[in-house]
Amino acid sequence: MDIKQVITLALQEDVGDGDHTTLAVVPENAMGEVLMIAKQNGIIAGAKVAALVFKEVDSNLAITLKTSDGRSIKNGDVLMAISGKSQSLLTAERTALNFIQRMSGIATFTHKLVTKLDGLNTKILDTRKTTPCNRIIEKMAVKAGGGYNHRFGLYDMIMIKDNHVDFAGGIKPAIKATQTYLERIRKNLKIEIEVRNFNELYQVLQLGSVHRIMLDNFSPDDLFTAIKIIDKQFETEASGGINFENIREYAETGVDFVSVGALTHQIKSLDISLKAV
Image (cartoon, rainbow, N blue to C red):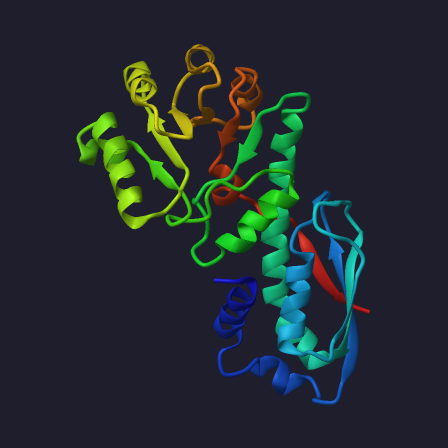
């Protein structure tokens, strides 16, 4: 699903068979201008997506972007100006704001976490804990905030998690089955495997044949030990129990990546409004 499809579905959901309030109240030939204004400090994301919403409603609307994704914004900053048919401005308003507010909330929180890791090499990853059918825009927002995208979906990477291991009968059967499967379907996908303890870690190291090891719910001390044991043979990722307060402690272990589901599933949207001029 691409951005245009997401926008089309969002407008269908909101508008249905017509914006009857606007159609009833606002004359068809009325023209107007609105400003999109930040009401909180933060990091902007979704400016172009919001502009695309307005254009999808009415291609004749004139839009002037006054900022771009990844930029810092302050309370009172004008983010864009839109002018044209008043009916079109009102119909597009909420859907455009929904996108830019949520995306900016994600970017703002991501940026706060990224800032916590200043001076370190660890990268912050998002996860698949996203709003259904909005993953593309939420992952765009993570990048705007300075984070990195993990796999997009189930199809672009092999990620053997705890339940896969258990259903497969263990670490080694899971890895061997993955190798056989990729050979059979002739795909070259990166392989990541989750380990829950040192016993599972040693099994992975003995067998190899993966690209990244996810160390799940390891304490910072255990993570530090595990990173030393792995000794750069594979990429490393820490996951589970990581938050704003402890993320630097985890990153200081030397782990390559830290994945944080809260980047996209526990976000407060940034306050942004649309005001008529």
